[in-house]
Image 1: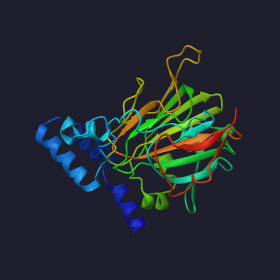
Image 2: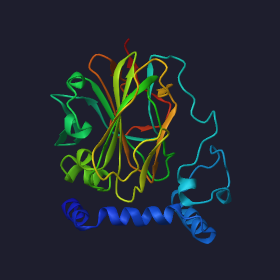
Image 3: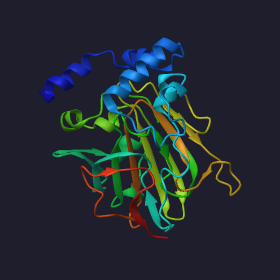
Length: 281
């Protein structure tokens, strides 16, 4: 069944379907947006008690609802500044050590960090990583796991396979094949990669800075001012982006810079702001 599902996705017009879905999701036509929002909420039972706007009627479009902001204290951060935090709500689909430059995707499947990041990353070999899958009902904004300075992004075009247990176990190098935005941060704990991975019907990856528009049509590498007064400094827990429909975030730490907490393993549910690793200076 998994092989047939993967084969079907190869035949589908992934980008056309995603653009069509994005058009519907962005519509502010009242009857259409209300229909989409209410049907979605009927299926997934989104927790609006923690949202800044607690009524379904408060949202102008499905995208507005899907990327809803939370109340300021909904995701408290740990007091210890040497704890890296989860960048998103979701479930840990894989976590562990980057061995010989490769990350575990699923049982029997791994992929190269260089393919995922679009560049060689030798200092990350032996480092830690965590892959977090965002389900449809989850909060879909993405935050910085550490305090640091954005130094570079790589917007990498690619396929838009759906991301779930079936595709992870059947499509080789899934995350390195899908469209993705690689964000590289410089911190007191070394370089940290935060990779936002697109997927089927993910209409767009947005960032809080003026980045390239998704979907990406060609590789776009952007380097940012590395001076101390650069505007791209982000505190731990600060919002950096969002998904218009769900997908996956992958966090990578350089070797000897972070130790994942024991509970960060496959199948562990997690919320943005919860500790995922202890950092070394």
